[in-house]
Image (cartoon, rainbow, N blue to C red):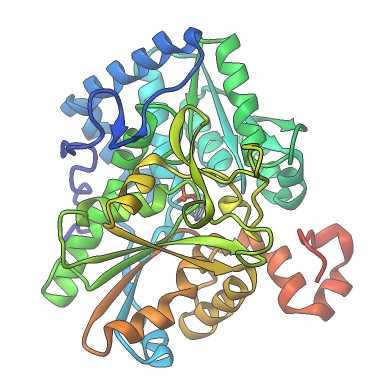
Length: 426
Ligand SMILES: *Cc1c(COP(=O)(O)O)cnc(C)c1O
């Protein structure tokens, strides 16, 4: 078990068998980008392979995870939640306690280190909830690197606090005004920028998505979540393996980070939870449940499409899950039957925010709440005496306006439009 002084267990080293040399996870993954970006991606691949194998790079990365991010994050046994739900003993992996309030900083720090190693002088990123933008702006401030963050105009509205954070950190926030004005449009803008500035600029993708090598690189940078969980669970329960591990899935980075060290343990159930928004028959973001394989943002994966094959606008109450694609490794793990993917609605997520807040004194992010929403049924399926770990991917401060508008009608009326920015009426 890592102590406060030990460096986190070597998070980027274990060579996984997938993806293959072309970045494929079975029929998913790959690198489908304009020709001008092929050599740029090849550079990133080469630099990442070299960095992974370089003990100095690893030591610097692990030092920053410990001394800047605050790792290892705790594994908290949730006694009152366990009692309330009546089944398996539930543990929370506390990524909400990372610097900046979510898991995303693990990835941002690693990729900024890589960009520096490659001699890049400018960083671009896309962001949905604003969390990846904040994490990237934070890492850029730490190293004094220029930072431009693309963000959908709708997300700029509903995540205004994070926009202010990014500006305070010295980043420029550029609105993406096309399409649904959310994460997928911000991603398009970021790709456009990269095509125009391929030599000076490094593009930090914020989830386990995009062209090879990003899905594998982002997984490897978040793998520390699962590695720590194993060691901490062993110390607390005597066994590294729980009966099940649960995480919410947007692009899939917090989920793949905690799943990766468990994929080889056939007796550990892995459960990913997507956002079913208003319900699977209404507007939602349940890509793995309802999507079809297609090439999207440089990778072959499941994608929400309409009858004409156009990208469908995803909906979730949480901006971080509001993405019509999903990481290609999740597409593979779904087809392989290794991971079960479930869904939770907006309403179920709101109930789950209240549940964790009241029972454990932890206000989770709306994204995280989707994972919490399936704990009751899962804890009962596993039963008393079993163990269940969920990835508490982030804290709810950034979502308080949305949460209060839905849970406290009176307050939202009093707060008015200046403070509360609900995405939906209600
Ligand atoms: C961004 C975000 C997510 C969704 O992203 P993944 O890549 O699927 O992990 C989940 N939880 C929080 C707190 C986030 O900020």
